[in-house]
Amino acid sequence: MTEIPIWPGSSSFTTGSTPFGYFDSEASFRTDADNVSDWCAKRLGYPLVDIELQSGNFYACFEEAVAEYSNHVNQYNIQQNMLSIMGSKTDSNLTHRNISTGMGPLIQLATEYGSETFTNGNVTFHTASIAIKTNQQKYNLNKLIRDVAFPTGSIEIKRVHHYAPPASMRFYDPYLGNQAMLDTFGFGAYSTGVSFTLMPMYADLLRVQAIEFNDMMRKSSYSFELINNELRIFPLPVKDFTLWIEYISKEERSNPLKYANGQVSDISNAPYSIMKYADINSVGHQWIFGYTLALAKEMLGYIRGKYGNIPIPNGETTLNSADLLSAATAEKQGLVTELRTMLESMTRSKLLEAKRAETEHLNVSLNGTPLAIYIG
Image (tube, rainbow, N blue to C red; front, side):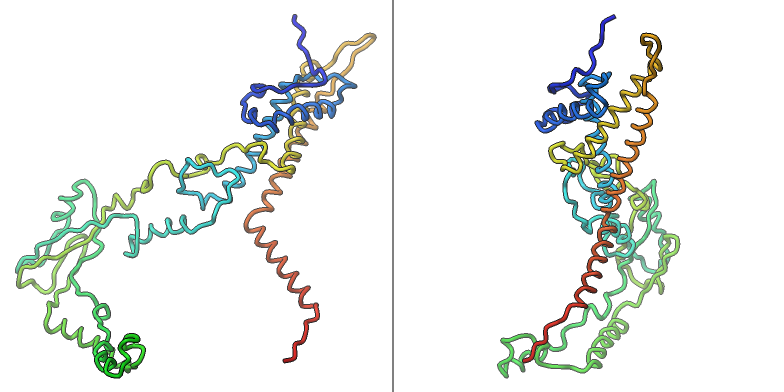
């Protein structure tokens, strides 16, 4: 049987030495890979005891530790920024990017209500016209509109363009009539009449009332009733005219797929990639070194666990597999807990709380500071 070499005391990293090759192209990773391997071997007892690992084992642990650190930080960033990045393009790498907490997603959510309030929205308003006939009061809009435009769906009438705009929309500036007089006094070149004259409120109310009375006495006084998409005109029409209607398709409103493909929808396609090793600071590197050592202990524990006892002259020796596995599990859990706790302390809410506390303490300190008295 061929003898498998174990850790010789040093290593020389080359591209392709790690399982995935995430960081093989980075000079800093290649340098630290050999340094971390040497450090882990010595922390495990080399050269006093043999370390049944090869350089490739240490490299794999090192790569996994960097990826694990990146994974935890990316999870935190996705959790914090999901509302801000939802709907953005998935072809942008957001790793190590400062994300703006804009109003886009909230406005996007508000557009769902805009269709119902006629302020904005993402549901198309369709238009149609109905020929109102003399002495015909009822009109089935399902037959006139739905069966023609959406024969397999349902429609909902949103607006009937029959009433004239309110008087307030057709209110003309009452001061424009005084412009000629202002021109006579030499004020016309400066601004409109509203800057120089003041009219009582009842004058404006009388003008609005005059417009409404004009509509009532000289124009049509038709009204309508809409029940289950059946339109009824009141009073009975005495002439033919055209009535315009706006409506929506209920299927379009209920369709949740209103946005294009290639947008962030959930945690699975949030564009966060594995960090570059060189972009991680010294705090992160120290965490990675500790996690690499824990992984190396775990691996060495599994290897030594294959043989519980090793025969030696005049007896046998027991390997420390259980101790290595126990220590590795505790160290990994401790490092992950430490990292997650630190990340949780950096949430926006926690940072704002810390800023508020800092401001309150500063105000208390300033209140105890004597203030200068200025005498003018």
